[in-house]
Length: 246
Ligand SMILES: Nc1ncnc2c1ncn2[C@@H]1O[C@H](COP(=O)(O)OP(=O)(O)OP(=O)(O)O)[C@@H](O)[C@H]1O
Ligand SMILES: [Mg+2]
Image 1 (cartoon, protein in one colour):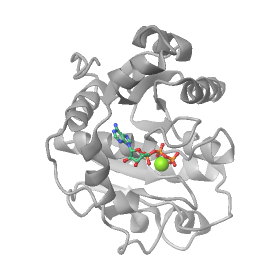
Image 2 (cartoon, rainbow, N blue to C red):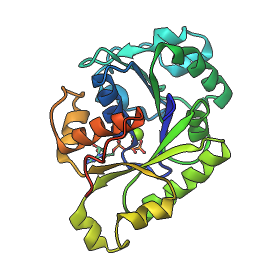
Image 3 (cartoon, rainbow, N blue to C red):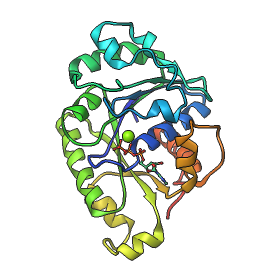
Image 4 (cartoon, rainbow, N blue to C red):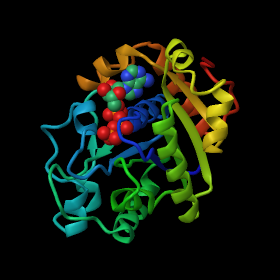
């Protein structure tokens, strides 16, 4: 995939921020330089997941307002110094213009192998800003109809922005629940609804929230972390099979 990746879903709570952090950590483990930009203005969370909330003096809106230079608003994560974060503003009603945001990312991207942008939920202006600098996209969905509707809408939006390099991440998958729901025959049905190639299937993994809600405390093994390691390889163009097939 290309180097500036937006992670979006349409529907809220599908696991975008979790996938962003999981992928970013896995890419750093593979010696890539990664900048993670939280674009969820007013609802930021990645500073908490990386345990740097006390350190954030400047965020991306400060860069855009001219209060600081882009590199002054970039912070290394506590447990993984090579992973850098630019936070979203904590509370703001100011919309960030897509073209200004793109300009800022364009200025920073040569410092990194990958820039990963965490989009807010929805298909409105927040998403348009997050997607503006992107060359590729990951759509994160859960295997259920409400989530897939959002995924289809976001795919259409991405295409209208001329972002064609799109892959699907099905997150929080639980085979038993999937079969009980009986909404789809199998996972191929889910993929067909979105019409985007699958790049990762992430299992429901109770350890993830403990790990990410307390400031990502290390590179502990867990089923989802194994999938993120595989996702990072696939994003980098290494042709490995899916780590988990459900
Ligand atoms: N694979 C998973 N297994 C178990 N829990 C998960 C998984 N992925 C995400 N979660 C949990 O689901 C919740 C929502 O995840 P997350 O905040 O990443 O979603 P989001 O799409 O970024 O939400 P929002 O739209 O509000 O930004 C969190 O509590 C997170 O820990
Ligand atoms: Mg989020």
